[in-house]
Image 1 (tube, one colour):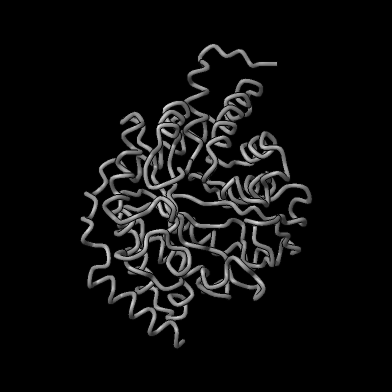
Image 2 (tube, one colour):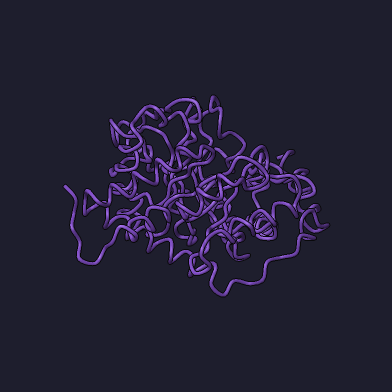
Length: 369
């Protein structure tokens, strides 16, 4: 049964549904098919990967073009994974940063903050607004195939301190940070790109190891958080964290009182794709408190997700209310970081002497520690 509202139109629901999607494109330029899809969905943001990148000026122009396809009063948030180490979408002539494990090994919070600031400057120079960094996971499982040296370290207290410093450095430069992957992907032996990881830990153990870095991120004023497609049976036997009200809702939103934007990890990952119907994923995640969904590659999935997010609002007033709240959080993030933002750095900041020297110091000191 549809909810008949006095003040909400189909156009409003479509606008809200689009705002909750961050989509990728296939290559270094926007195709005509993608242009049509963007104009129909009007996504809240875009995410770029290595397949989209040729050289810095092309990335900057691509980000400008993507923004030009959407209304200027609701600019898209343009995002990238620029962590350093093995997860760095834009490489030379941008600075090649060592993995964050090296940064953690140096154990100098001023240096960590400087690295966060330098990465933030380069990301903004390329036309991005948000970097899906830092990794707030604690690398506690040597068999972990996906986190490893992306983490600042294997001790929760140390990771917490570096997460705090990195976020301050990055956001001081006007680049939105994103702490990931809540509530922790460090103690897994399965890659969530390929299958659903399961972490069999009791809540007190999670409180001691996994959760403190995310608390530190929130204390640092982090602009966004990304969920993990990981099952924690002691918290929720049926739903991975992205879809779990007991995890995102009860812990992140209520216990930690976090009211910023929450992103899902990529909805195309095998941990969730094909394991649960997409409508169930979006409904449960919205109920849990997830604001925005990443659809990183497949245009058909973008359109399907958009149509489901519209329909969920039509069928359930609670879903509509949650969508309204999500769009408000998006608006608050834009207000905080985009309105009155400092001018973007010039592309010459990429691989500048200061940044190269900083990266060299981290490599030399961090590899020896």
